[in-house]
Image: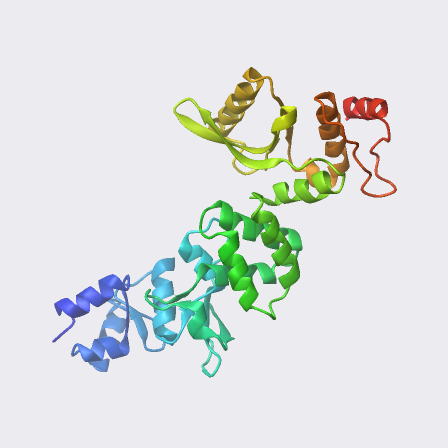
Length: 329
């Protein structure tokens, strides 16, 4: 057995170039041979007892293997590292985060952050290598550490919108984590997610426009046939022929997205439905949006009357005043 043994080559290939001293020794590669290869630049030591079979910059995926091999097999990719590994869109950074059983006492290493867990076995997808916590565990742990509830809610909703998990699976995990920071607030976000809310902007509309001002409940994520495919409308008040589209900055600035939005609006117009479109100004001034939505709803037959969300809310009391305020906005 030696460096070029098929089994050892296969292990290194599977581990994207990373390997351990123990693996090398098992295939007949001595510590002296490892040291000589390091000095000649043919391999490089990443952590104590962990190497890569090349020199130069270590790609992120190889760093994951090296970090896991340094602490494994009783370790799992966790937190932002797990979200990046699962392919969830976001800026997760380059620090490797690992979760280990609570009883383990090991040293930290440069570029690696360790978290201990008393429920390690139940939180981990054991069949994968490197081992990794379940995506629901990763989403909730990262969301609970976000500095603002806005960004925590956005992460939870993004994970569902990107079809990486579901509100129901996240809720089941949340039910198991009784000491998780922000547990109650995240539970409320998940309850709204089951109603079709898929982004922080949609959550803001539901809570600060629709509910806060006593507007009727819209149907969310309405699928509509469009040519050879289908489009989804964010909100629709079908009884009153009103569509509301909520456009965040991301995903609505390129030409293809603008064309999709125009096609969607044109299709609505051809069915005599009105479309109101709001962006992130909704977060700063939800009352202005409520004035406009209420005015169109009433002009299309809604018999109700909106309510002020606070004593200082600019929402008018009468229908005539509402129309004037809607045009002013």
